[in-house]
Length: 121
Image 1: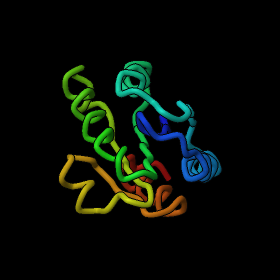
Image 2 (image 1 turned 90 degrees about the horizontal axis):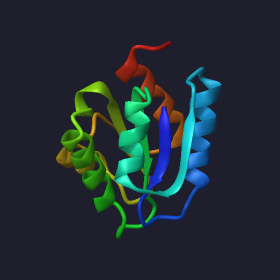
Image 3 (image 1 turned 90 degrees about the vertical axis):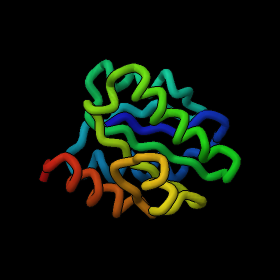
């Protein structure tokens, strides 16, 4: 799982919690950090990530999630990865609108969503 806070956002507490919970559930984690450019998420998928988990805390940065999904599509790797989005301003409706595979309101549900999307138990 490649985990990162999207471009323009420097908040990492939620991302770190999600990474810890996913790791505790047995997922291998590639923490991309904060202010992550779409191209870095693409590289992570090209390097083998099967899940991308994006976080945003600022309403001004959530459009970067859509931009990242578009970058995955442009790079031809969108069909190789499941995309999960979350963060305080993110909603299920927004996740659906931008074409994410899953939405998580908190760190514990991120594990459930990742498990459901990947079939990993």
